[in-house]
Image (tube, rainbow, N blue to C red):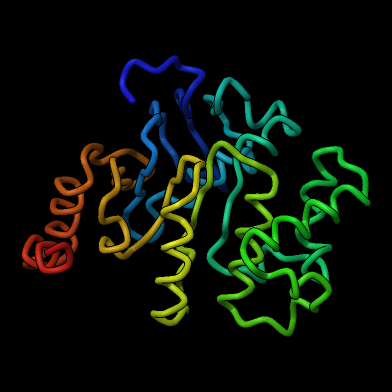
Length: 244
């Protein structure tokens, strides 16, 4: 994707975020155009803060994030169509009692009428073969099913970028594989935060954050090998085993 215009990707310039006197992100500059990008680092390294900043959920002390030319902090309506985020815990994201209401909510925020939003929500459920979920109470769904509701809710808004923050935590292996298969076929650019390097197999690029700065940035195999080597004794061998 080299040679793309700057407004065709995610442009991060001088991004600095502070909280309670602590610098969480320290002057990050990135241009992200690849289709699949992984984000790794220790707990507290700034991964989730960066993800929230890319979504416009955090106003930085300095710098800016634009997606396809949309300033995600200053243009909140534009940001709704530019980027969507799936959180680690679906219960931190879901706010409505029924599935159709949850999916329709984001569409209403984009300016659609209640009737149109509910109709689109049902159409999106049908794409995933889940038409029968429309009036189901969210509380009756499993964790994996609630993750899928969150994914459908975000995809219904047609974002250019999909951010995943440890989306497979606590899920069983069959559910993880089903969600992975769904994600592989998606059109939006994906940025995936994870502690499991195996989940980034086949990704185009990986960013390794440490102390609010980019420690390493490059092709996925090289960055993940160095990251694992730094995290554990024999990390490089562990990565080789994971990726075959």
